[in-house]
Length: 452
Image 1 (cartoon, rainbow, N blue to C red):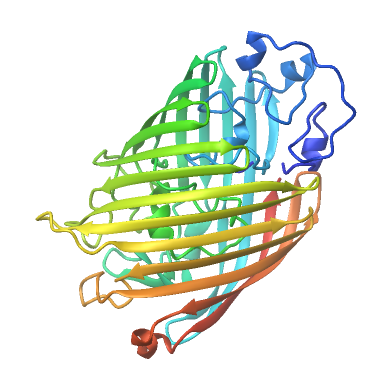
Image 2 (image 1 turned 60 degrees about the vertical axis):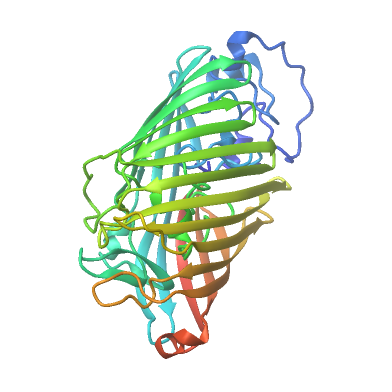
């Protein structure tokens, strides 16, 4: 979860807090830290100065370990500790309550014979409550909802995207499926077992297993773009899983975790909560060697992920690096580079070819008003020209690049509205020219309401 940016009005309103690379206030002596200070609430976070009064009123524990809460992204994924907070935070007794919302109204124009245009709403509303029960024990609960189902079962036009189904019979191709209304309903418990070590368990219905980097709508490097990546079904299509349990061990900047979860992706009924099943496995190793860098490598064996080909399993691999650096008091630079591979495995155990995906994305936010983002992707795919009654066809290597910007206007200390747009170029080989009419240029214009 990305949560107020350095130097935001909320951050400025918190006595004694400074954020990395933000202008520091005049130094004030801090009392010696006690063992109760370190986790009756949390240890002092990097870049943060707190007085005794601050510790009593602002306990900000991370959900899974004794480190900065800024490290935690979607599910149990990590991002750099230097990531700014994107949301609002309040205390309710011993509970830290955090809220985040991003709602987009988008006009989408995808050009060419397989394109289309439409208006749609997307985004998410998220809440989290965390309580450090003692010097060793922390519990947390998350809920995240999406307006995506309002766009209808066929989603929105998006050239070169493929995955899931609109009606239970027909694969979605050149369209991005809507996400479910309930994107996450989860709880976690962590136990501190050393100075910099902890164990944890996370469960969700739905939730996100331990695979890939954090999901694209939470990655600081691209969360401002309303356009889903065409690499979605390589890196983070498991982010809404109806039934997941993850257990992990954390030692300083290293985390090893494993999940059992339901392999089948959500069906076309976007408003329900599906029955859990624990038939798939994921394993992830994460390492934050510095405050600005987060690395991960992960593997998953997924049982029958696609509704239209229930006899096929998948094996997936991913590796990624996320870099984040503050710019001035209110800005930042964030970038992600990732590789993924998925391999189909039929009922007899025969393996298909490995289909690779590559992703580079970045966002520059020089101040509180402007944001510029860009993304480049390349995938090997066999879903663009499916055989009749199938989701697979001939394999092609295709690419896409997009760039966009947003101008934000702050309405209140915690609410702002933005106006933005993006331009994308879809790159297709000659064998797809009869279907796509060559490389195509598309675009989106949008307005955004953001809490934080």
